[in-house]
Image (cartoon, rainbow, N blue to C red):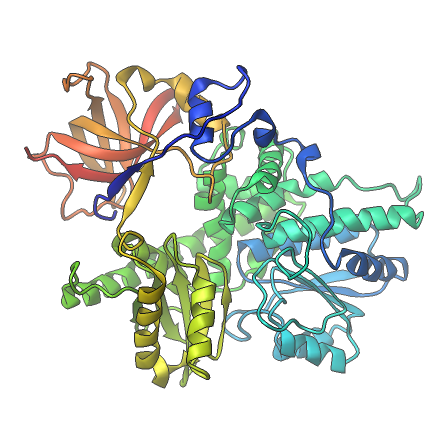
Length: 581
């Protein structure tokens, strides 16, 4: 857990909600720029129409392939968004009548990311008539060209930001490509593929493809997968994504989801009926991602695709084992990194603007998580590198609010021609590769770029708080209201509060989690008679527990906990600080 941050109070904007929205939610929504009842509507009718650039060409390609029973090969990515995109594409195309559709996901350790010429050669062995990329392809200029030489058209569906040049594909569907009128630019890859299927269904309907013996499929049955991929990819939860996630959550809570999702819930110890978006991001997504990080994401895809509950549970157990292994590797790497940083004795006077870390023993599949952990501790953009081979290294980068990572890397690459072999990504996360011999030069260039593009305020750790709660606010009613008011996530953050509490009890549970009993303080500063359970995950066990401390400042989320069929209030503590005066 990082040092205690600066507290910034959220300021609610003036809203126009009806009386049907509770005052607490009006305040929270207003602080997030959501100002009226219509903006919190999450029915499917709120989804914008499929108006993406490239959709007509994409639908014509796919409809022709389905009608002529051509072989369609989906080429995915090796993370949770890529896995769910692959499954949505495969299940959706089959439901629409495709008789020959299969998938291929590059092993990150053999082929790297995206539709490379090498993966095209592997794909060609299956003799596809059409390649469809999901969650990748917008930067696959050489791969698309390699497919064209073999006479294989490529349909690119992606959501990553495009570079200066686009691949010469048969069609490209990406809401972030130049000239695309679609208003929801924040779709994950799985959301883009879902929209392609919606438009394709309309195209096939106009071609009179459906009949009594071949009825139109209900594509809403795919929304559990769409929700999972959207949350796991940490894309901004603007209204379109909130609709997709809400609808998927409703299906899961009602027990109408894929057997693989149910199995992942079981191994994660989560109750489907009480699932929230955060559970997808912190419990389900990591187990799927572990397969892509350590082994092969196909294991996760098979788990999501199977209709057999026993097979799903067996595959989910394998994913759970991989996730435990991933956590152990991550902890070892984090310990290595913290030793290096401790040796540097970083403080406000000498901490780099952008932190680069490299160790030849680190695992290539886990450096992204390591970068995220170090970023959280030091509040700096971080890139963690591992060896790709004898001459090249691959890095995974995580950013802080205010620095658009992909734009920063693009500027760095333009000022230092040839320094980067490849890069791509989003505002908050990116990947890159470079020659190991160039690492010192890159480290200096990255620090300089970050210094240029950020200011002191952006490099100061801060947390936005929705204020302080009074003792009467710590109720099951409020906790359940907040759980149901989401889905919360990126750019629509879950409510956080701050305050001072009397520390009644403290102990370590698990390996690194601080279990506490807290008593909120009254307006006069006295401890109330009410006591509340609280937990802080991944605490510094060299500091906590501390029997000398009896009062703490905390930043927390108000939640409820179901244990042995009893609901109780629980605080999920993000930051804790001892009060010594």
